[in-house]
Image 1: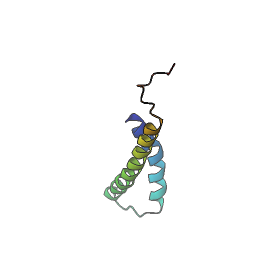
Image 2: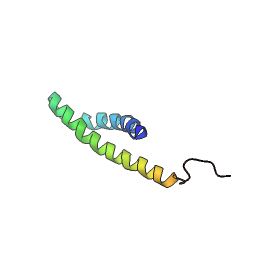
Image 3: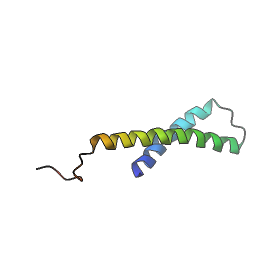
Image 4: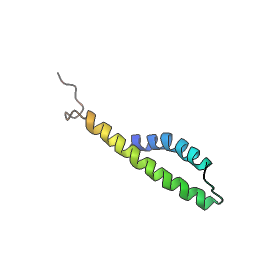
Amino acid sequence: MQTTFVLTILVGAPIVAVLSLGTPLPTWAARVEFAVRVGAVVWVVVALAVFGYAWRFEAGDGGRDSD
């Protein structure tokens, strides 16, 4: 969960900033709504990617080294 949070901030903030450059956002409410909408999509994509990574590389041994 912490990985998802950190990656969403690191990836999402620049994406929201770049996408907002071409979008008219006259009020703070419009800015917040835009950030929430784009941020939600970024969060879902990052969460699925982190889940897929964890699922693919899960050894099923509880994290122990095999001898």
